[in-house]
Every structure is written in C-alpha cells, then in structure tokens.
Amino acid sequence: MTEEAVNTRLSYARHAPDVLRTMLAFGEAATKGLDPVLAELVKIRASQINRCAYCLDLHLAQARKAGESERRIDLLSVWDEVEGVYTDQERAALALTEAVTELTDGFVPDAVYERAAAHFDEAELARLVSAVVAINAWNRFNVTFRTPPGGTK
Image (cartoon, rainbow, N blue to C red; front, side, top):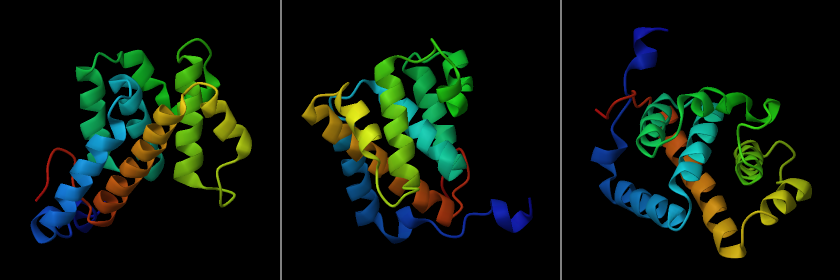
C-alpha cells in the first residue's frame, strides 16, 4: 500500500461537525432496542464488505466489549458457510445486511426481506434496516476520506 493510501484525505468531523453530530444521532437511534451484539455483527459485516478499516477496527472492539466471542468474530466473513455458529435470527440479519449493503440486483430480494421479517417484529426490522443504512453511510465517509483505524485526523 502506498503512503498516500494510508493518509487521511480530510477530517469530515472537523469540516462538517453538524453532519458528524447528525450521523452520531442517527446511528444511536438506529440501534436503539436492538441486541448490542447483533448490532455489532451487522456493523462488522457491512464494514467487511465495504472494506472500511476504521469501522472494522472500531466495531470489532465494540463487539468484544459487548461479549462477542473471537470464534464468531473470526467466522463472520463466512457466516453463511458455517452451521451452528450464528442463530437463525442473526443469520437472517446478516443476509439482510449483505443485501442492503450490496444491492446487487438493485433491490433487496423478497426472500431475504421475508426471512428477516420472520425473525424481527416491525419495529425491530425498521431499526435493523436503519442500522445497516447507518453503518453503510459511515463506511462511505471513512473509505472516501481514508480515515485510518484507531482515530481520525
């Protein structure tokens, strides 16, 4: 990796503090009432897909702090390949996370949405989708501005 690739381009927190405050409030509201471990798994998985080193570093630490095991963290990138590691509810949330993050077909497939809807009530589902949207927004800020793991410039 080149020196340029690891340097922060600019600090959006410094140059757009109102956006930062709004994003922080959105992220907090999005996860209100969700299981903290589930919320961290979703944030980690989206950050893996989006290759956001800053968010991965942050949410891996938060997941450990919330009591997540190293084994489950280590296997998260292949969650759909392993049986008995994640609950059906977590698997549904992770499938939804991937569908919302990638939007491969330009939409979230009905089967993925219905799978999640079978495991979450409407309020939880609204929060889950909000949490996925929030982490994707954070990923895009941090990837664009090359925010390094462990802090901002």
